[in-house]
Image 1 (cartoon, helix red, strand yellow):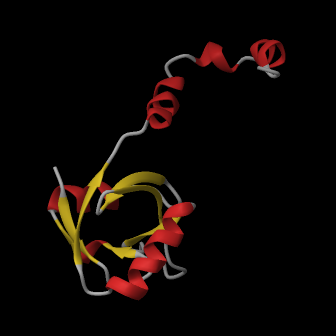
Image 2 (tube, helix red, strand yellow; image 1 turned 180 degrees about the vertical axis):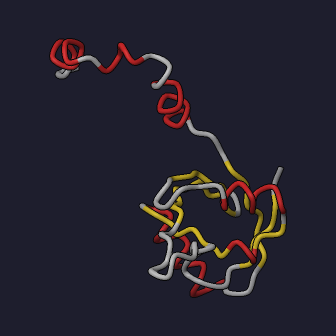
Length: 117
């Protein structure tokens, strides 16, 4: 399901997302936790911003990697526009999430045997 977000800053502030479900999902992320989102057809990485010095959570995510360039360009050229936004699951996310189910994959012996592959 796609929600909408308004381009208002170099970060996405939760209050600018139309959609309680996605907003709550993002609020549930830990500081610096990564999430993949599709914004206006472009899939990229985002990171939950750190809690402030006063202890209040920062209600925003910031782009990372190539998405930082895309979002910065949009901010300069498309500020104020509303665009579709949705969470996506990438293959790498799946592998990271299931790796905790197989702790034997992370043994020193396996690392030594397979490190050059």
